[in-house]
Length: 175
Image 1 (cartoon, rainbow, N blue to C red):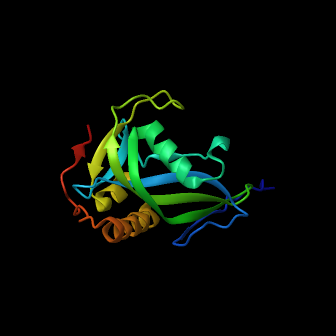
Image 2 (image 1 turned 180 degrees about the vertical axis):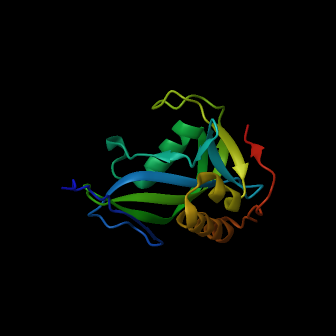
Image 3 (image 1 turned 90 degrees about the vertical axis):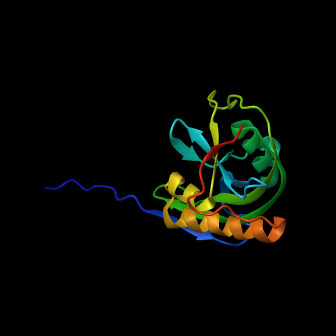
């Protein structure tokens, strides 16, 4: 007799709309933060593992996702934002869990404070400037990630008049 095995059903659907449906809990708010001069995006470097700055809404954020965004990008990457705009969300369904939302914002860097450890993890992350196309590859988020970065790039060009860094632009550390 064969033993039955559980099948995990995972579905992630990217939605270019706003706001996310209120019936789903927001578990993640990430910023695609653009440098105002180079048009590159800032990616966190955690010893060769890359991510966007962002994190989880806290009760003190009072359900204001922009508050979560600003708090998290500063806690993790010590970035101060001058402006931001939502570029959509992902609806995530995982076997055995209630569906939830991951929110994405395009954001414009105002200034970068000196690097300090993230109060949540105790680790200090590097900050790398890369083109949005190269960021998609570093993040390893596949087609959905590339689409999120492309949507954020369109927003940055339209809203802030940025010239977006081209694929293959040399990486730079943000000091």
